[in-house]
Length: 108
Image (cartoon, rainbow, N blue to C red; front, side, top):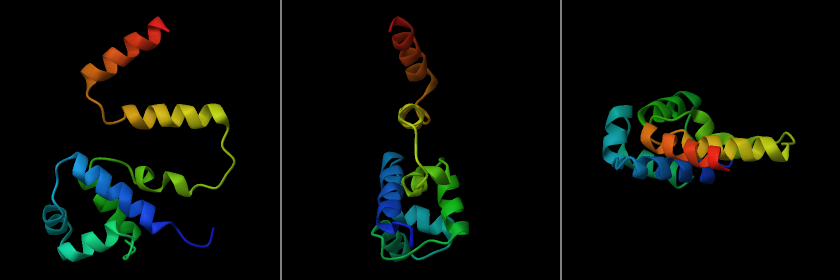
């Protein structure tokens, strides 16, 4: 891997921000950056530093791994990949939803 896929990282940031109904202006204000910088990050034209990426993750209430998971190049086992997909989808669900899903899993 020569370079991170900043296009995909930006898409994941936009995806999470919009899921939280957060505007680019609000995120920019909290980061003390210009709103156009957030737009450039989300479009892959700007590359956020690790510090900014961590601050974005904190503001969007997720882990940095949410943005960069696809960058890992080690060989993944099929089951661990499925496990990770399930866990990542459940991570930000409310407890009531998690309890319903747990009941469904128990039935299976």
